[in-house]
Length: 145
Image (cartoon, rainbow, N blue to C red; front, side, top):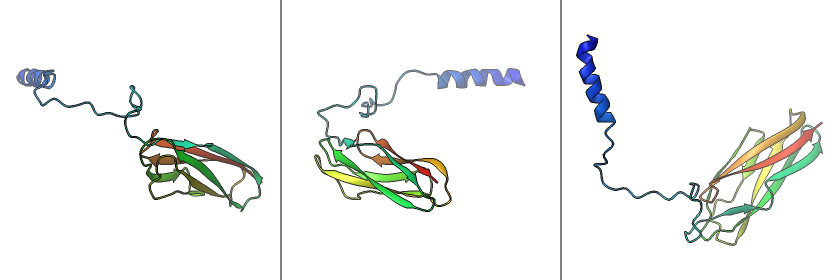
């Protein structure tokens, strides 16, 4: 039975390995995160944070604390933040839902609920946007007593 299938397998393999490009030419998609990097002539927002880490220091269990991360759109196109995802349910991020024009600033406010926590806590918020870079990590830290 294997002998009967061998020509079929070889034929399938040769067809799958056909390296000739018979389809239409396709332009390379420009990706600002590619090896070529960001093209400065291209209209692209760039999100620049004053800081990407905040240490609250020590706090008592049960406290709810917040910090606002300030950012600026240093690019040359409108910035749109699509989401801010926290690493756990104890952390929530509030972000601007409107476009941020080039040169304008905004804030992402991260709130942390320390109820039921103890010891050093480090929480991340991933900011997804149309900017360069497309994903940006903000981090908060607190020592809960």
